[in-house]
Structure formats: C-alpha cells, structure tokens
Amino acid sequence: MSSAPPTKPKRPDRLTIAIMDDALYFTEQHLATREMVRQFARDEVAPVAAKHDADASFPWENIRKMGELGLLGVPWSEDLGGAGLDVLSFMIVIQELAKVDASHGLTVSAHTTLGTSPIVRFGTEEQKRRFVPFLASGRVMGGFGLTEPEAGSDAAGTRTTAVRRGNCYLLNGVKRFITHGGVGEIFVVTAVTDPSKGTKGISSFIMTKQTNDLDAAKRAGVGHEPSLDPMPGFRAGKKEDKLGWRASDTCELILEDVEVPVENLLGAEGQGFVNFMKTLDNGRIGIAALSLGIAEGAFEQALRYTSTRKQFGKPVAEFQGVQFQLSDMATEIEAGKHLMFHAAWLAQNGRPFGKEAAMAKLFCSELCMRATIAAVQLHGGYGYTKDYPVERYMRDAKICEIGEGTSEIQRIVIARHLLKELE
Image (cartoon, rainbow, N blue to C red; front, side, top):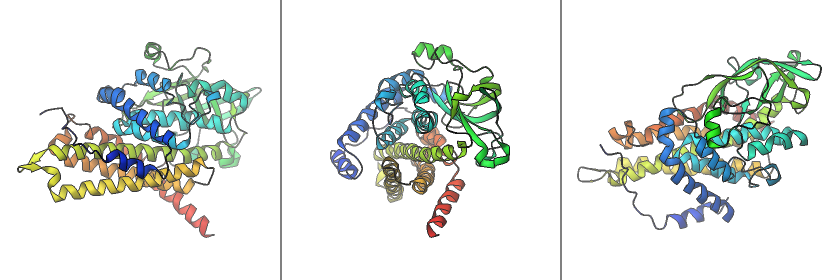
C-alpha cells in the first residue's frame, strides 16, 4: 500500500477559467494573496499536517511563519500591526489553508475573528493600541471565552460572574471548548454583571494569562509576550482530546477570583451579549470559508485519485457513478463559494449580513460533511487509511456543523430574519 498520491492530470486551461470565474469578487490583489497562501500551504503546511494531527500538537513554527507573512492580522490596519487587507482577503486565507489542513485555517480564523475583532470593533483607542498589535502581528495568540458547560447554543445562559469591587471586577466561572484556551495569552471573556437584566446584564472583558506551552513558544520565538501581566486566578484547564481539528488548541478556561481592571471592560456594561452576537455573525462567514476549504481539498484529492486509480482496466473516474459524485461535489462547492463570498462582500461593504452569514455557514458546513464522506468513499479502502489525507478531512469536517452555532441554530437565525423581513 503506497502513501504516494497519484499524479494529478494537467489542466492547462484551469487557471484561465478560475480567473474568469473569480472576477465577480476578486481583484488582482486578491488573486496574488490567494497564490501566496496556496504556496505557503503547499510548502509549509502540507508536510507537517499529518504529524500535528497525530500528535495533537500546536504548529508553533508555522504560527511564526504565518505571522511573518501577515496572515494573523489580515483585515486589520497597518498602524495596528495588521496587513491592511479586506474581508475577502481574510476569507481567501482561511479557505486556502483549510484546503490543506483545517487546523491551520481554524487557527487564523478564530485568532482573528474571535480573539482580535471584538477589541478592534468595540474597544477604546487605548485598548486597541495596547492589545491589537500583539495579536495582529502573531506575537501572541488570542481567544474568545464565551461557551460554558451550561451555555452552548444557549449563549445567553452565561453563568460566569463579574462583580464590581472598586477599580476592579472580580470574575468567577468556567469557559469550555475555547480555541487557543491553552496556548493563548489575550482573551475576550463574557460574564454577567447584572443578573436581573437577562441578556442586557452580560458584559465582556479583556483578560490576559501566560501560555501553557511556554517552552515551545520560546523555541518558536512567538506565543509569549513578557510585557503582558498575567492575571492571577486566570488559567487554562483541561485540554480537549478531539476527533478533528487536532492541531488546533482547545481548552477550558478557569476563572477563580480574577481581578480585572475596570479599564479592561470592553464596551459599556451590558453590551456583551449584543457585541458577541455581532462577533458570531462574522465568525460564521469564517467557518463557511473553512468548510469550503476542507470540501475543496477533499474534492481535489478525490479527483486526483479517481483519475489515476484503475479498476476493471480503466481509471475509476471513467465510471458514470463516480462522475456523478464528482459532479455533485463540484457543483455544491461552486454554490457554496457564492454564498460565502456574497456574505463576505456584504460585511466588507457595511451592509446587513446576518442572514447571509448564517446561510453560508449552514450550507457550507453541511456540504463539507457530504464532500468529505464522498471523498473517502471514492478512495475505497485507501480512504479509510492514513496513507491519504481524506480521512483527516472527514474528521475535521464534522465540527464545522457544530462550532459558531450548530446547523439547528443557523436555521433558527435564518427563519427569524425571514419572518422579520416579512413584517
């Protein structure tokens, strides 16, 4: 059983077709960004993806390289340490990385959308100058402390508390399934400041801790910033042993009598719920891009394999049943691209996009699951082995239907928008 993938047949007209199709959304800058990320994914991510997946290890060396390329601060202004590009460029980066490895794509997506964007969007100038350059440059990793043991889909059910004590808030609680919960050093964390006000009593705070992977971070030269004072009582808890996204760090966050300075309140008291719902809208486009990347990567693997794998004396791709599956995958991927990039275009141009983001996330995540299952099937017995990456793509796909709001929640969000539009 050989681990070497079959050679993909040459398609000399492919680039021309891609450029013509992409003209609806992309400029030359977008295409240049895409080519740069494709090369990085091919040269730096592909050779190590399987090992990081097997070890469930965080890819610190590639984090450093992505920071140097500006991939950890794509949509933020250059004066905040970012690359100064747009939302479409950000989605291109996520999608292209996910074609090779979902964990790398998710790291960029969660760090940027969840860990950094709330500070950029809702923070004071002082907060932005203090924290964003560390995040946008990739100097440290960021995260978003929202989900709790009793508050998953019901994000309004937050139990973490924040009690004002003079110039500080005293925070207590547990956050669950937090991307970069272990490796990260800057977090936006939600907590209840006034239990009597329901969702209007939830606020958010900027919090800091030391990475729990200090030695590896020091070896890579990124991941730890000595000038950030860790808050006593704020620490990482259990690291999750996951089915997929195994090179993405997922941990509990423990808050035990953590004193958070008043100046670390993000926005006004009671605005936490509204602000994190806006953050999740943006995050859903990112998960749609991630899902598309996984689906497209699995499709390309299946196309390559079936074009060279022979059964009954001819390539498997010449059988009509296989062609039907490939055609369905390609068609759904193209549909998903338009949904995702349309939502991204709306966000980029300051137009309402909540419904479109939910639609893109719903369709692309479920497409991702279908495409990866089909890719494994088209590989036959080889698809069930680690000789080919499609089994990893399938494992990585499932969480896309769960994270940033389950498929069921997306359908609720879409329905609410439809009914509101009817009114």
